[in-house]
Length: 309
Ligand SMILES: C[S@@+](CC[C@H](N)C(=O)[O-])C[C@H]1O[C@@H](n2cnc3c(N)ncnc32)[C@H](O)[C@@H]1O
Image (tube, rainbow, N blue to C red):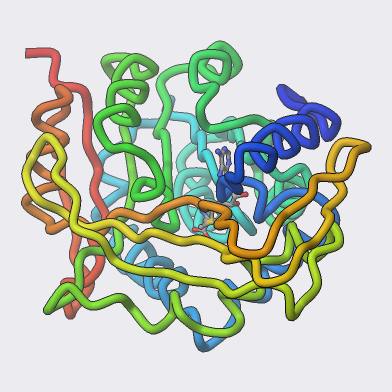
């Protein structure tokens, strides 16, 4: 199995140091470095964080319908793969018809290895790619069309939707498909308790704790904040680490001094209503081929194509 590195450990470390010096900790760094993949898999498998598992159930229940939408020539690309178990489910179906190529892409090299191992027994030509999602342009040059491009496990909600959909639209050809899932806004605009659990706090603080921040030296905060975007008022999480005790963290061979009272801003997750996702797709030149909802309608899985008029 082939593995390509568009970003190296050294470049990731330098990017992390740059972000920390601006008091930012983007979510991609939660999954990289020593222990990142392991901590994610622990959180993903825990009963206190059922979001990812429910999205897997939705995908599994939709596979029968999904397979009507790809042909024998479609290959699979997935960006932000985690353990790669959702992609395994898809490839089990796809590889019944014909041998496929599969590009599994993630910023974490350790997760790319795990995802490659997850399909080692299937009749697929798997290629692992360590890259940022933001490098779709470079990624597109690696894959062979037509493809089903996947963003699964609520990844879609971690980016500015117009920017993300614009980049996906640029990357996709006429026969390509775009498959993604979303955990939708809950009733009464409540923050899901999964996000406030101790295990999630531990996962979010790990990159700094592993680099010298004392376990008692910070507080993890998460809130749901209203936000006006192109399709109206929506909500997104705001996450931050409040530094309680002066600390020094090591990154890229230097020490970064964090003072008590400083906030480290982290990544966000949008919570859309399903109509807003539909409106975003339309605005960005996509049309929906089919969508599937979980029984309580808190999750949606969408298969879309570029609308070539
Ligand atoms: C929420 S997990 C979802 C994992 C998996 N798709 C699932 O359904 O369980 C997010 C995944 O995206 C990866 N990731 C986060 N930010 C990324 C970025 N900017 N570029 C590429 N991968 C990224 C993480 O390493 C992780 O594997």
